[in-house]
Image (cartoon, rainbow, N blue to C red; front, side, top):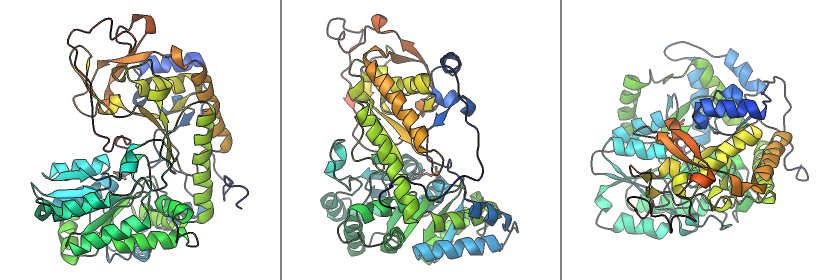
Length: 495
Ligand SMILES: *Cc1c(COP(=O)(O)O)cnc(C)c1O
């Protein structure tokens, strides 16, 4: 049904009410939440675009599969069904279930790395980087140059820089490179896909230099869909065929199945190397569970197996990609620039461009997320200087993010066209009065991962001597030039 790109290949059988709130209720809720949307109760949110992780809807077939779940501690039928489905998709002989993606990362990197070793990647997702660093390793990002240009329509901005990869695999640090990790799609770079040409050449380089290649496969089906749309030579292939080919190019994968597994929780580690698999299995037993359940219930494994069969359906992927492209179009029409080209799992709004009167240390992205909530009950997540920046004791910027963005992630099979149009109308209302939006200051912050738990307060425009227009005339007590952090994983926020 090419003429109806957004038409979903399913209808609703079970529904969940969403709240319609008044402006006064939202103002009160936001004050109570100390202007941090993570502190809201979910039932105060009308359209929740915080994340696409674990927030999707199950199919009738998945619900039926759940009833067949075998909750035996060891050797459950559910595990064998799950392992067969994952084995057929990936070709990996060793499949270890885990409760979510980061558990697979922790186990793999604990078994593979030791202090001083290096992983190279297109852009490590932030939990991946954290798990490399936790065991003393170093995660180096080698994104292709196009990734740094938010306006570039290049279709494969998730590609790794092959020349930089070649240099790293032949340079002085080469003996310390323990693995290459390719993230499909690159969540840290805005959900941009990796081309099969790039992945094939990466695999060839890895083989030539004896370095294992792992996929971070959370969105393997969405990556495959964009390959069938945009990569010459793959236009007549099915997303399933492309996904199988991608897995076959690698030595294993870590996978959060809260995304393209179409389940609320789950993940797996897939491996070819039997020795590595054995080391990982010991860690699995110690920290997740026996190897035939790995922290999941039998019913979870059955729902995941069924989800993996559904997620490569071209009609599902067409509708999902169509919906995301439609939301990006609504944002542009409202006058809000987005990171181009929009991927499949989210639309990233350029708050820095929309709110030039709010400097980075007054958090333009945060100002836009608060406005989205106040204006329309919509919840997104800031990916800017609140997430990545640092200020001194006087609130002056020490480090700013390279871009001030807001991510609107689209849960799978959850929202309809009319819900997206509500988000578009909300954005249009905000954009008309964008110059009146206040910035925010932090009133209490956590020592780590501050965007989750910080408390903030709006800074009325007339009171803010930190406004970009006023900075030159009213120097702040200890002026520091803001230092932009490199554009590494800047577009993800731990979820
Ligand atoms: C979500 C995600 C992870 C971590 O998975 P969890 O299931 O949240 O632990 C790792 N890598 C990527 C690319 C992700 O999107």
